[in-house]
Amino acid sequence: MPAHGTFVWNELQTRDVERSKRFYADTLGWTYEAMPMADAGTYWIIRMGDAQVGGIFSITDPMFDGIPEHWFAYIEMDDVDTRIKKIAGAGGVIHRPPFDIPNVGRLAIVADSGGAVSGWMTSVRR
Image (cartoon, rainbow, N blue to C red; front, side, top):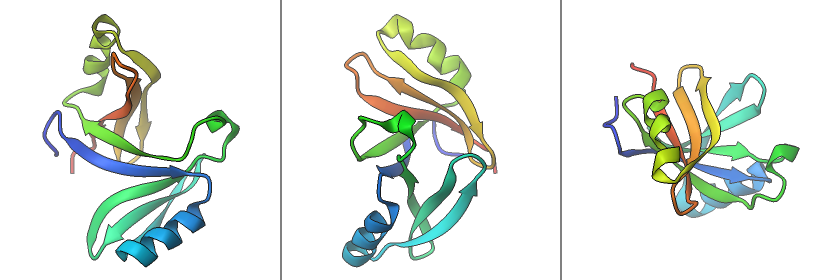
């Protein structure tokens, strides 16, 4: 399991997944592996050779209206449920309380005291 407090995943959130996949395949040589998600269509695992280096997620759902395309970082937590209890007292905001992604982990979307948003996650033990 990754170490607590380390960046563990980067995700491109885009409105045109195919355009983004072509761009990074052409410029960086990335390949992609489809990972179907129950209620969110297909999530694309980015690969560089055999290594998983990130993901691509579509933000075409109306809940993402007004959010520009961007890269999103996830930070590993020893216990995301315990750690987010400290956010409000430190001046942060919980945008999405902890939720589970099967075979991935438990995640929350938070903003720090300056408004910078990141994902906090406790990875599934493998």
